[in-house]
Amino acid sequence: MKSLIIGEVSNGTLSSGTLEIITKAQENNLDFKLVVIGTENNPKIGSDTFEVIYVHLSPDELSLSSAADTLVDAIKTDSIELVLASSTYVGRDISGFLSVDLNSSPVANVINFEINGSTLTTTNSIDGGESEYFTNVTSDVKILIIRPKSFEASDVTLSENYTTSSVEKNDLTVNVFDVFIEEKTGPQLEDSKIVISAGRGMVDVGNLKYIEELAGKLNAAIGGTRAIVDAGWMPYSQQVGQTGKTVKPDVYIACGISGATQHQVGMKDSKYIIAINKDEEAPIFQIADLGIVGDTLNIIPKLIENL
Ligand SMILES: Cc1cc2nc3c(=O)[nH]c(=O)nc-3n(C[C@H](O)[C@H](O)[C@H](O)COP(=O)(O)OP(=O)(O)OC[C@H]3O[C@@H](n4cnc5c(N)ncnc54)[C@H](O)[C@@H]3O)c2cc1C
Image (cartoon, rainbow, N blue to C red; front, side, top):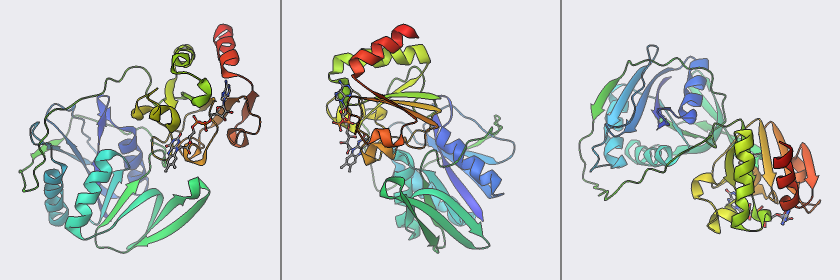
């Protein structure tokens, strides 16, 4: 099945979500090319084993709908049957534009897919990951939006072999007045082997200094619940869960987190889960490998001291 992967760049290389999809495509022997959408300033990474095309948006015309027009042309010219995108802002938005132009419903929240001849079946997760359902995708061009961490990213060999393509401005104009790139320092949530997340049980925003100190000792990334993101304790980019990021570290330390289903969806596939909560009935303990019943403000400083 001829395929197109919508790639993204993060931290100077291909994003972990893109690498996961490439790995899956290679394992399934898909005939694919990778398209990376960005500005000319984005770092360029290519490959000797698959075709990589950079689609450039000019800084004053950052319209994804214009990029989608370019992709639609490429999809039609190359008879692409399958488009794979990550469930990110760019992946979801581009899939939406493509679905309109190609008259094909995107299938979202895909955690796996199988191809048998011309039949493509996706596995989708529902009920907070408790249940799965299957979809036979029958449209001419099949558009799948893949949930991050659904596949392992193995080592993908990259090179400087790529081509570029520019975008013609279309009628649907989006005027971008300014672009803010969030400064990213330290281990990143999606890729870190250890994630320490804070919930309302940290009691006060000032107590996040303990989380930062603990993360520093363990070289861990920091996440949080929607409750504390909504309270303004942490930026949205650090939210873990259904409407935030999905993480799958070796160790996830939940500090003062009740373990609502919407939070669990984003972290329950972590290898080991450690939970600190003063309520022994908190749902987080149902999925924890190690549960510590107690006050975060007593336990975390002691943990830091011992480390
Ligand atoms: C559509 C929708 C989408 C959502 N998406 C997300 C999402 O992506 N991510 C997400 O996280 N949530 C999400 N939520 C919200 C979710 O339902 C919960 O409200 C939220 O996860 C709760 O956050 P929390 O655990 O920090 O707070 P709480 O539920 O208030 O839990 C705080 C916990 O801290 C414990 N605690 C209090 N003080 C201490 C102390 N001193 N020491 C130790 N423990 C203490 C309490 O016992 C309690 O268990 C979503 C909700 C909806 C409806």
